[in-house]
Amino acid sequence: MSQKIITLPDTSGLQISSGTSIISVEKLVKRYKKAEKNAVDGISFAVAPGALFALLGPNGAGKTTTISILTTTLSSSAGIVRIAGYDLATQSHQIRRQIGIVFQKPSLDLNLTAEENVRLHATLYGLYPYRPMFRLMPQTYREQVRSLAELLGIEESLFKPVKTFSGGMKRKLEIVRSLLHRPAVLFLDEPTTGLDPESRRSLWDYLRQVRAESGTTIFLSTHYLEEAEEADGVCIINRGQIVSAGTPQQIKADLAQSRLLVDAQDREQLRAELQQLGLTFKEDALFSIAVGKQNIHQLLKSIMTPLSVVQTQTPSLEDVYLQIIKQD
Image (tube, rainbow, N blue to C red; front, side):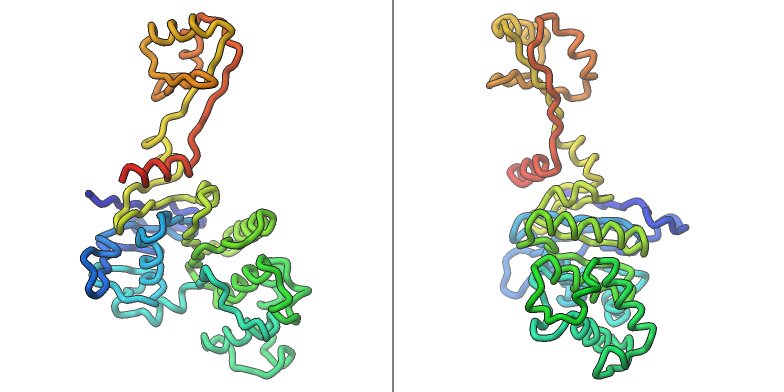
């Protein structure tokens, strides 16, 4: 299968030279010991600063392996990866300082307060010297933590034990912690798994605000396909290879057709006319006509039978994703 390279548009407002990417992946390969096939099989893509990039794929497709490599927690077998200008093979330490990570499973100490979790993280990253109390920390730290907490709506809970937090609040705290060192790229691995719809919506509202205010590039892995609808670019990976890549609109346009749904009081007459016009259609509760590249308005004008129902059906990214996975 031929590999596809995707380069996403720069949405950060930064002036960057042609070909500059915040993430560049070339022919990345990962084969585990004793495995018969590559878990990641020569994938390539590039992401510009400030973009929202979504990596999609079923369980076992290779997306977790890819994210693990990009976040320096797993070594690759071959390929070249550069993040924020640094080479993964020789400058992994510098890359760690340029990225923030929110894992699928919370990695918080439930017995500490929210602020204590953030303070521990800041100390481990070498951002600030450790102090036993918040009020003894440098003023820049205190201002930054309060600002991030206010942005994510958890300022009033900063000094409460994390074990009292809801799932949504824990996710927000992890984002506060991951943004403390002002990363160039924020990796989100299934960030809304286990959250109720309201918490998911709220979390994405805050992530949009974070992107708008900081220009942070977001690299997203998710099972919720509607979360990828707003992405600047999408890679769908299956069996270790990229099977489709582009903007959500491009992927939908290339791989799924919009349909025109119609019906009439005289269904026999409508059926006969659609056949006479040479239109490809399915008949169920309604007549579903494949639109293709035809103009819907012109298509409707060509149908002379009086219609009782007229609807358009545009495929979602989830529809296309399922189609790709089934075919691959």
